[in-house]
Length: 539
Image (tube, rainbow, N blue to C red; front, side):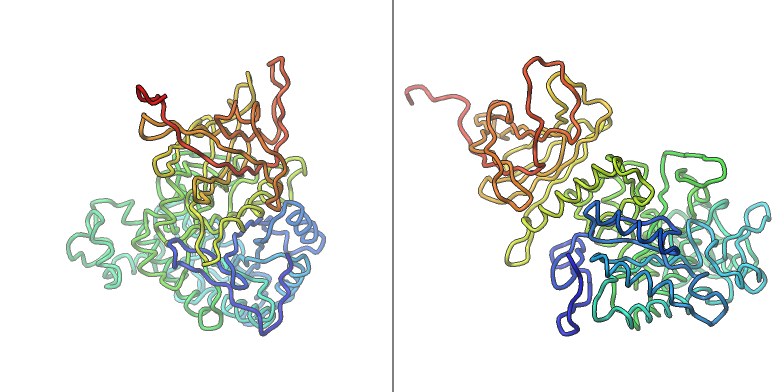
C-alpha cells in the first residue's frame, strides 16, 4: 500500500471512538497499525534506515516507528536542524509505509541521555533529579525552571506538518519515551522539594481523594504519610504529566495528529542485567517512578488532557491484566513496543482481537535473523487479510475474539451467544504442545458463520443448553484474498467436530498415519445445532 495522495484528497489521521475504544483512521478508513519499531539509532544512519525499512516491508508491516532526537534536532540552543526528520519522512514515504515519530527528548527510558550537550553540561540551569542518598542522577528534573524540550518539540511537529501535510506519512507522534525516575521513588532536588512541600494543586485534589491519605484537605504532598511510596509516585507523575501536557498543548496548536505517551511497566518480574536497566519491580524507582501507568491514571488523565493515548510497552507480565487496564485508562489501546518473537505475535492477536487495540509494534526487527521473523511475517500477512473482512459497509465492525495460548494459559473459552468456543493448542497427534505459542482471532460474521485466523489451535464447540450439541455444517480454508482454497473435513476437522489450524512449524508426530499440516491460516465455518437425544416416538 502506498500513501501518496493529492492535497485535496488527503485526510488528517485521527482517532475514532464512536464505537467504543479508539481506532485510528487514515485516509478516511480504519487503519490497523501493523508496526515495527526500529532500534533507537537506526534512523540516524542511511544504511541502517534503509535496512530497517526493507525489513519492515518484508514482514508485511504497514507502519514504522522511528526516533527523532533532541540532540540531533537542536544541537545548539535555538538552532534547529531538520535534516534527520526530512530524511526519515521521505524514506518511509518512498518505502510505501506510514510513520510514527518517536520524540526522544528530555527523557528516554527513565534517563536524559538524548538531551543535547548544551543541556547536559549545564546542570545549574537544567537541574537533575537527586536520589534518596543525595546523589545527582543524569535525569533532568521536571520541576526545574526551564521549558526543557518544549520549544524543540513544537518545532518538530510544526516542521512535520510543513513537509507532510499533503501526504500524511506521519500518522501519530509519541511524546518522550518510558518517562519516569529510576533509582528513587521521587526527586529530592531543591526545586522538587519546594514543590513537594507546596500545596497539592487544586486540579488534582478531587482526583486524588480515593488515595490513602488524600481523603481530607491535605495542604501539601509532604502532609500525606499513609502511603509514602504511592504518594511519591503520584508526585512524580504530576511533575512529568505537567511537562508532557505543556508539550502536547503547544504542539496541538500546529498539528491535529494523535499524541501518545508510552510506559515502562511495573511488573512482578524483576530482571537485572549488569550495565543495563531492563524491566520489572513493584517499587517505584525500580521501574520509572511517575510514568503513565494505570496505578497513577488519576494523575495523568487529570493533568495530561491533550494526550490521546497512554500506552504500554509489553515485554513481561500478564497481558490479560495489562491490556484492559491501559484500554480503560485512555479509552483505547496501542502497544508501541513488544517482543518480536512468536510470543509477541501471540500478544498481537490477543491485543487486537480481544482488547480492541488499534495496533501493535514489535521492537528491534531490524537486528533479527530473518528466520526468526517468519512468525511475524506470517502474522502480519494474516492480519492484513482478515481486517478488511471485519468491516461492514456502514462502518461498524464484526465482533472479534482474540487469544494467545501458552503453558501458562493452555486453554481459553470464548462465548458466542449460547455457544462456547473451547480453544486449545493443536500441536499434532501425539505431540506435546508444551513450550509452544498458539494464537488466533475469531470473527463473528453473523448467521452462525465464523472466520478464524491464526496458527496452532483447535476450536471445539459446546452449547450452553446440555440438550443441544453443535456441529460444523461446512469448513472452508481461505486464501489471503478471501477465495476458497479447500473444503476441509475428515482428518482436517477431527471428523467434522472442530476447527483445526496447525502450527506454522509443526513438530514430527509419532502417529503412524500421516496428517496434513498445510494450512493458509484462515478458515470460514458455518455452525448448526442438533439435539443430543431424540424424544420417544419422534422417529
